[in-house]
Image (cartoon, rainbow, N blue to C red; front, side, top):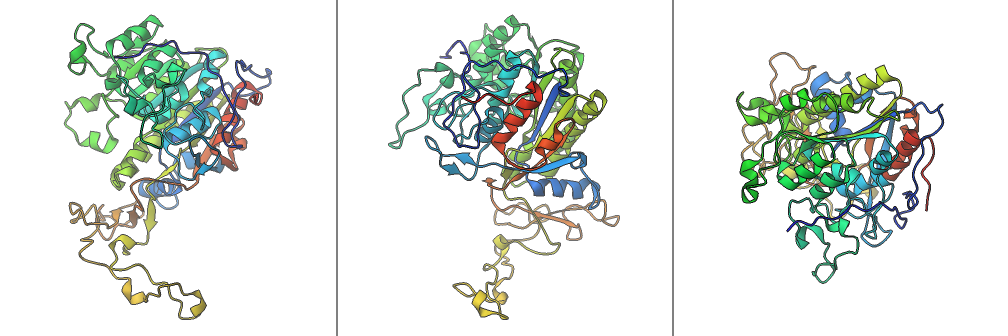
Length: 505
């Protein structure tokens, strides 16, 4: 059974790592003086996008001396992404998307898998909730399910990110204790209410675009429409509750184009949106062809939000598939998704340049999979018969234990049959790099060939703890041109919107 709960007024608390800042309970932020130049904030997240992701995409599409749209922004910095251990201030050095998104949306460090709660499982206010309450227009866009961690952290609260819906289960919504049993259900029922149900009832975002149709049910559509939303497609036939999947209809690009104003929800796939590379290879009549690009969703969101409120708007845009394709170690799809995300950056910056009162921030939640650019013609350690040498013939004091000679670092044919987007791609033992031509390569050089100049490899199939890049354009952009903690992004965006620092409790 689904749980229908009234979404309570959000109360922020402290108790996370000192780097975070929580907003005082029941404090309503006020916009700053009329001299405040910022009216809009557009925050773009390349999920899983580390520094090497950016470099590789630049070289792939624009050559060594080119630049992505994000790299052309005047302010550049770095963001530390570590999380916290549950129930303590102890750092967890590698974050997931949920804890990272909570850091920038609420200004607190929290445990991996937490959405809109601190490390002690207490609800914290989000920037989008505060902006909505103060009268700003708001939007949330993603190429993932809109209930997934990054978008969810702006407009919902859950003890576990897996509590997406449509149905409740202890396994999805309650953390486990050390003995393997589930925690007691919290007094605040919001925290175990499926995220889809929260989104459909709290009205926090005026524009909601992405995937995740399967997370919603007909009563969610009814709740949204009762609040004045235009729901594109259909969440299902209420008369056929057992056949929701069969009766649901995904929204289409054409549906989105027809929207001219007002609050809107468009879910374009039952799951995540289709990666651009795969979509391009599908037949013309494939339903995935009807999905809009991230750039198209960004442009439409801006057009719907601009002018909706005299105060301005807050829009979050996520390029989710960068992370998901990095988890899969699929370099070709990863690069294409970075390009698609960068096209959305251009759409945001083009608007900001015309508007003059818009701050654009581009960053990532974490790096994924240890993406590496390696020298042309080399092989990875995973392909080697033995680890690289750790001896220094010129100074034996530099040797390690055990000692290994340089002759041991040779390619093992049993572990690699070539580059992974070449003839050996289907071999599960293949740990070789993927190779791609760049604009600098001679004519005739093809992807997957030894002659291609861009050689890419992955360290793992999961996140890393590396700092991520951040770029900014517009008034207040200089605030982001530094090394900073991800919790600091919340306070900086808050100040840009409201003209004052968030009150601490």
